[in-house]
Every structure is written in structure tokens, then in C-alpha cells.
Image (cartoon, rainbow, N blue to C red):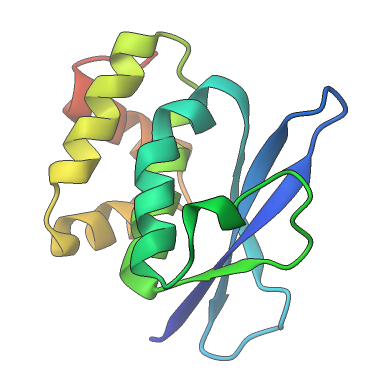
Length: 139
């Protein structure tokens, strides 16, 4: 199964921005399906890994900005990692827990990231299980 990921910038009314990760599987519809949207603290906690994913996918970090209209294409492995990270961080509020989860996901081998992404992309229970594994708690 071939997956293509794109990161879309979502301008926010307060002048900031969020992101939406979209996935297109095996040449499905060009717009793909939304995997996750994130903004605020969860996005800030993930930003270093999001920027790394952009660099590893051939983009400059400066390409991610509020005025961006064209989606940023991500290599499959990096799209999986960004998706997994944002799915895991989105409901969290404690900064220390976000850091623990982000560090755990950063250290995962690709195979483990793919496994958890496949589980978490369709199940809030799997997302919670990942957070428990990564940081020893749910919220």
C-alpha cells in the first residue's frame, strides 16, 4: 500500500496557524483524507519534529508559515511520524507529558511508528494506549 502525505496550513483568526495532515492511499482522491488537525500547544510541542520531517522531505523550515496556500508533501515515513505525533499530542494539556510523548515517538524505529500509526489513525482507544505507553498516563 502506497501512502502520500501532505501538510496543509490552516490560518487561525488570532493570527497564528494550525496544520492538517492529509493522507492519500494508493492513488485515492486527490484531496485525500484528513488524518489530524493541530494548533496551539500540541503543535508547538511537535514543531521540532514537524520541521525535521519537512527538511527530510525536501522543504525548508521557512516554507511552513501562516500564509502558505500550497500543501507541503511529506515522504511516507515522515508523514507517518508527524501523524502519529500529532494524534498522540492533540488532547494533552501538560507540557511535561507532551515532551515525554514526543521524545518516545522520536526514538521509535520506523516499524513501530508504522504499527502505532495504523492503530491510532482509526481509534481513540489506540491513541490513549500510545500515550499511556509513551508517558505513563492518558491526559
